[in-house]
Image 1 (cartoon, rainbow, N blue to C red):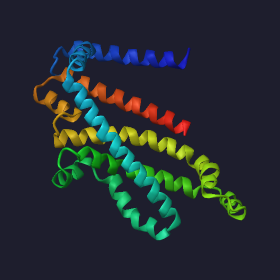
Image 2 (image 1 turned 135 degrees about the vertical axis):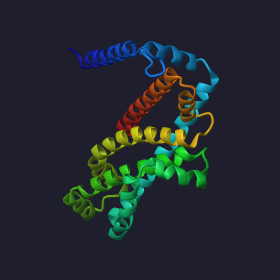
Image 3 (image 1 turned 30 degrees about the horizontal axis):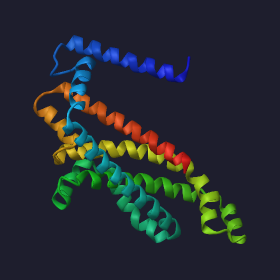
Length: 241
């Protein structure tokens, strides 16, 4: 059986289980079924507010993802060159990995306001992921290859292309996949807490306030789809580069 067909069957099985659970509960407030969710999603898609929320949230989360990725990669490279910088950054990276998003949001709302909260949060979540993976990849680079490159005076661009990038590729690939998913999780959570208008987080919060469980599931499906599409595009772009 083809792999894609097995995935479709598994997804269909979970949708059926979801529908059966909704029938058993028999309460749309407690658990809306997939049919109600699809109807709610079609209703949202037909509004300009929905598309505005999707573009605003996606744009801010991807911007935070890019900022956090660049900071992580650059600082990891510098930390590999300077041991004191690695020691200096270690407590910060450990704190960013451990402290919950909600703890940051309250303080960051005062500093940056609700409009840009998802950008800052996503950057803070992505940074340690890319930093640690890049640093680990640089440390595992074959020392003999680096010595050979130094002896033959290999230019920096070729050193990057033929030695560092092949070594870093598996680290980058896993880091980017993890980081994009965490970006959407943390970014949406920050929007739900900060409540910037015209965002997906605001739509989720309003669904909760008005007890529109079908709308809540519909927004959640939208977030999952956007995250999946962004992950595939990033993987494709990474392979091309």
